Image 1 (spheres, chains in turn purple, blue):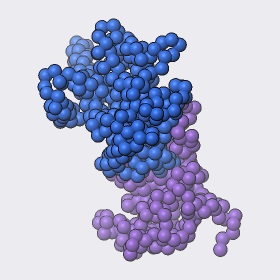
Image 2 (cartoon, chains in turn yellow, orange):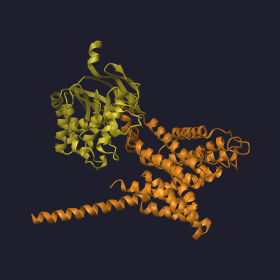
Image 3 (tube, chains in turn orange, red):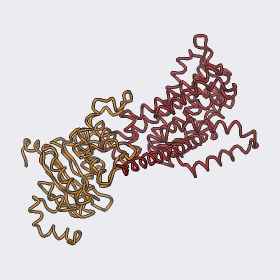
Image 4 (tube, helix red, strand yellow):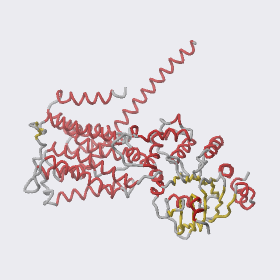
Length: 255
Length: 333
């Protein structure tokens, strides 16, 4: 197989990953190799197993079989919190922001979560040295003038921006975005693609997307899942040209 | 502008002892502050972590029982210790009790948390009632008075009121401080979206258990004040009625803001003391029940919520007026 040096260059290796829910095999013997700094999309119809795959990589769900290596290190048995410290960050399909906190506090909770210490009760957040990191994060995702707004008062698009900003706290090594474009207007989608293009070069990105156009614009390489299995892999151009994959998507888009 | 209400409250507390008689000073004022601190521990849990507990009076009772056990042995039960050591032990035990209840409670959500904390509360009640070696059974402990410090008798009405006010103020300020620290922000974050907090690298069950521990510490302080106010503690202090009173007072005052704890405790104490003057004693629960119902129906966020909404409406009306004047000026230009 591959040399050890090669494995180091791979941000994420997934080997024989399988997850069963009773008789249902949601993810079936999936193998992935994602290079450091690569931007990868996982495509597939509803129920293809994409989110289950994410849940296993992020640690929210233990796999039935298989291994997950982060930069060559086996993280299969680590808790979600430990994986965050190793640089794995994820977002969810549904917007999950902290509605009762300001945008700045949302970002700050993310900064603290990634670096710790998380249980400080002696000094207020305003007096903490890492409080300023929230400014840079807000700028990255275009929320600079919304820092003092309650997260529950943000528009849906802004909430998605905020989620991305939270996931970028203390730069992750591996960023997992679960349908970042869900529910966004076409203008918001464009600025999302731009934001994704401006991510740091060494950040490895995997995104789940229903929208072929977004996925194909934002990534270097595409993995297509179908019924829990990896159906095909290739560059966006190859995937666009693949008739079998187009057929799977035709039904959904019906353009 | 923002300082007006806190300054008014401080002024009121300072002046209060000199305009009221000793009944109002101790039985209304002192009780409001001690009982309110127990309610504060519940409001802290509910407002900032989204968790409910019916065991806060129980934790307060553990603080009270421990203080009595170590400072006022009754009927051969108890060990006399110097009072500072007794208080440290009492607060430590209350915090520990909070942590242990938290360990059990964080495995459940919503109504099940209420059920399990209620079960803990009732188990403790029957323990105090039936155990004579530690809790002295039905009698409990008597003559548990506050200490005399440097010649100042903290049990005298005026010093006791100020002692209660200082401890209540410290607890209130402590809660307001903690919720702005990284720990407090994480608690509020998990109140809103626990899954997301985990995905950001936090240990969610640990945060929840620690919140229960902090609530236990606060309840312990309230429990000690409550003990000193009554000079005694017995199973009746941790029975079903007082356990529910904490929740009642919390909802009356408003479970979303720490100030609601003391507002609720005040209203509850006043009704508790004066209902008897115009209705029969056995109708007290009917009256407090009706008030409770009215609050839940018309202002689910309690009396503080009512005040907040009225003041925002005023502020908004004020802004509208200003906006209108500006527009008239603009027309002139």
